[in-house]
Length: 432
Image (tube, rainbow, N blue to C red; front, side):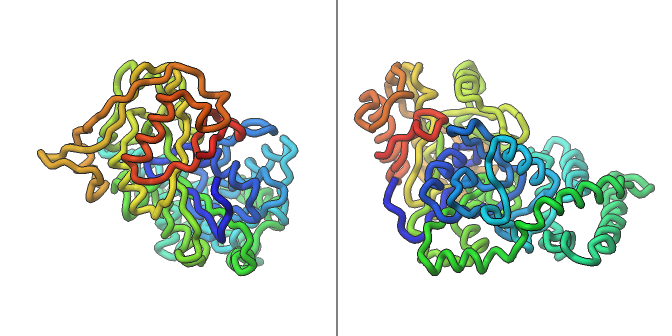
């Protein structure tokens, strides 16, 4: 990995689930601060290291570096109950979490039970036009945030919290009733929710703070800051495959908004992509393999959502989508993960272009569902290496055909590949 300069940011140029957790865990060993900048518990970052295997949903993947400070920016939406459970589970594995190494922005919005209710009601009402939401209440929480409604983390510490809670719950019960086409008000278990919130507050209160001044202090002292995105660029609210998108911004613009650190002070943006392409939920996937090859990739790659458990749809690596996501996400270099999944393949294909209505694209002009649904992938074939790569420590250790595959992806993507992953462990990483 290149030498640290100022600030670095890790994102995903595609639909997420490409191994950001591992890359961030690896880079975070040299970080002073790791900042989660968007999304909520809809993200699932899997990390495997000497302490075990962990599926993180809210806590930044830098938590395994005891010298780093982790922060949840105000642009993240926080489910305090799930966050509390996540902290408890990590502490069981002797991972220290306290107000010194985990900071939670006072400005972050709270995900409440009614947000999950609204999420599922809205998804059901879409019928055959479902988005494929995780059902975690992310969209409705961001919607309330845009409307200047809802509860924020700071409200947990407010003397009039119960009054604010009662007012909000009353409104949300009526809204859920309207959404469910029910003339009666929907009722939530007030006492249980409050008790759960009191328990969560007791645990996370020492971690709640004004995060921005801390970020700026680290930035001004030229500390090693690492930004961590949730989801991927093709799920970006404005630049992704609308309407099958998330409600936040996973790219460099989202990092700038979350931290107040200007683009000129970000040394590089690293995009993490697998050696093949996956997608969870609805929406077109041009290279999707609905056959035994797709099933083989899913099985060997353990392609099931860390948050939902849903099987991921699998296809050949989609270079046009990768190039588009890299462009709009401000990506400078790439980390290529899971090339070891192809260790038993005699042939590997890569999509190097689209044909849409007899027009060929190397980089599509947009990521619309309409364009992707009509895109016919232009495929090229490369010979497989049919050798185990998991023990390779350097690029030259890789089989020649594996080296050829990596260099071909680099050429077609138009971005330097600075890291190749040959396994899920932190050590199974090759710097190029």
